[in-house]
Image (cartoon, rainbow, N blue to C red; front, side, top):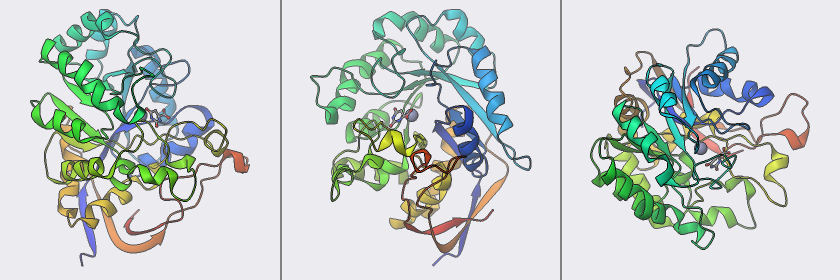
Length: 349
Ligand code: DOR
Ligand code: ZN
């Protein structure tokens, strides 16, 4: 059994950190593990332009521990009123790594999202022209489409036509959850990639109903059948450069998750790289972790690979059952992914 593994410092290409106290609580976890993270813009109100993103970025940097280098890359929220000038400005900032397309109503804080894809075609053309990446929440919002089919239908109805119409546009299908998502990315050219979360590698949809209803296993896109999980496992661990790490770590306080209408999102930043290591090790693919975590995303986004390294040691430890907020009120806790579980891979800090 390997005792330790050293890899180039990984990047998290899909991360939610919110703002205010929550931001201060969660950013240090990511900054101590990852060299960069792509910060999602679904605040309320959303982060729509470069000025707003740079202000948000400096708030994030204020929460990075002083002995740590961490470079947040920002995604801007695409709306019906995004302009070509917004795109051009974004293309000129090294801190901006793309625009996020949320179909309006698809998920948490997506009300300002795009209502009709046809309405933003000129903006997407401009993104293609200026080499700006489109990050996509790939689910249709039609309430008549079964929640478990929303990704597959989005690929058919929106993504395939879009990628034919604007073939040079760089697209990341975020948090893919289905075999259809894997197939779409695999059969497309190098301009199209997919991120994969730890929860979609760990669990199938049974987890949401294991012994009762489990609000902390609810995220969007929702967990799918076992066959889809297996397709994701293969995609992540086979060394294909089109797939890379994006945790979609999304902190919501316990009070908001354990409620009559619990919100979507799984928090994993406190042990993200350790959990991916555990997942890769479980199928004897630890040697594939570095490509997925540290190289493929940087190469796709055309940024230098990180030069520092991290070391994971093979040492059993127990993950925390909760992460306290400032006032230690139970409602304000975060319940992380794999709360209270044992892990055999530990980050050497
Ligand atoms: O589960 C999710 N949580 N999915 C998303 O798309 C958004 C995220 C959040 O912001 O909490
Ligand atoms: Zn997300």
